[in-house]
Image 1 (cartoon, rainbow, N blue to C red):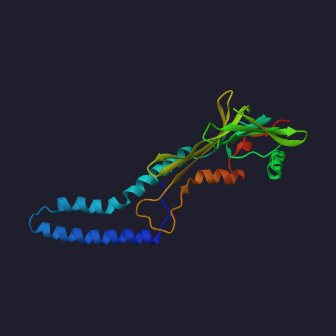
Image 2: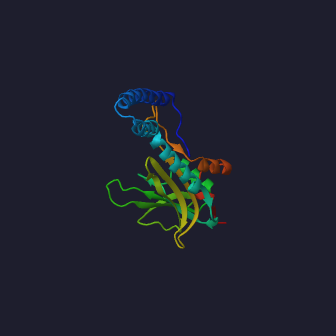
Image 3: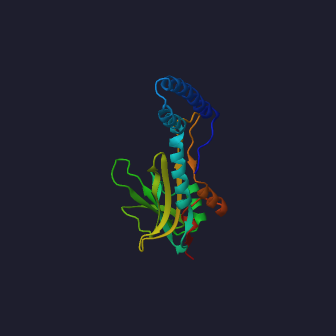
Length: 231
């Protein structure tokens, strides 16, 4: 199980609920016992409901979150391959500059690939297109395409997709579109707080397995983890 962060205000809220609830049940039990000798048959389930009910959601979320993290979360490298370039379906560019701005050109140059393809959102609501960056006379120059030409794609199939009650899934992968083979994958899950959490913020909690793998590799998952610039 992976329980949410502890908040003193949450503990105080639960304590108040238990205190008031216990007082009411004790009064009700005393009143009922005077009229029925087997009042405990009713009171025991009511006390169990009082103490388990407020935290039941937290236990449910914590169990499912822990199970998903242990089963799926982490960075998984199946194969590394040489490539001339790749398509980044996560880029979501809104504008294109000709030639590429210096920071982008430096980034492309440092990456070592011969070309880069990035998704280009259609600001008028149509289908997305593709920007193909390659060197023309030594300058990184864009070409607008209708479809990617790269064999290898970097995708985010799940970006905060619902994975259960107050659970979300994050997944990134690099796929060989010719063979449909997944070369590498990053999977993480996030959970939110139970109803009784009280705090200045309600940050998402992520799987420690994904964080551990990223720390061990010294970087977050990306296409360069499985794609090597072709010699």
